Picture 1: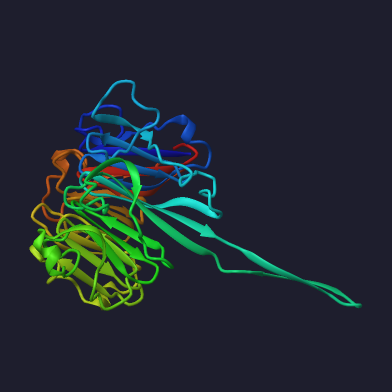
Picture 2: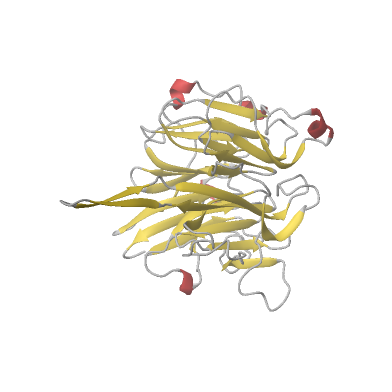
Length: 409
């Protein structure tokens, strides 16, 4: 069993609590009972400005919040009356046969949603098909019959779908499609022979990391967050309407995280290689630690103006904006997991507690009297009870998420 809880900004119902009031203590989120049978649980959370995406282990994608932009998709079942807000989570209407919860996508193999991300008013998802095949040959002789079967390595292919509003190219569908509420595939992407291994997005741009070590991005690139753009793109105000390869990285990219006006690309965990592209506001480029400090990282994340790296030893390294206490407290202690929102962050400690710090004006760091954005201050917002364990944390635009599992969850 699992319990999903949320707190923070909720003016558009993006917490999925059934109302539109901000809350400063964890509140249970009720999901459709038909979707939460035994063994099914949340696996990914992505938050835009006023909407939230929730991916379940069954492959079902849910959304809540502001529907006017189209970023919540077409909800199931359709609303009986027009509305611009969905304060509860509902399944997103995904076109078939490309999206089959337990099917093969109509083309063989296992097809499922593997990554989700969100810009301010748009949603991005990756659908990956894994195909395995076997080849066999039979040989016989007067003394024996032999059957030889070989299993070929599985092959993967991906498609990237976007929906919502993207006046600066956030949909990646070209200047002719700045808005759609239907998940639409980005044409001719990724390139043949590659598949998506990571996906990140922030306010106005998105980045996909491919299996060949390349990073491709689209959306707003005015500050260099999508690399150096050619003159034609620069002449359009830095808008990249379709995925474009980010040149000159210098290493094979494994992970990407996006801030408001920057992108941080990471190489292999063992090397600690990393590069920040875009604006250096708050020192996100010039204050970045050396590769040796980041080598062996476990998780990475970014806020609007900050970057966080969780090392293998449980130490949380951060740099960037700190005028509201966004940086990790120095005496935080060993951390299991980290989640980074727009201007706040969460850590799941080795003791099993969830602590929050940063800008908590909407209650996303707990009761405001306890977390007012002072440097080094933090607030314990949750602890696992007897027979339960907090297994997942998430953070968005002044929103906070917790998943607790166990018999008594």
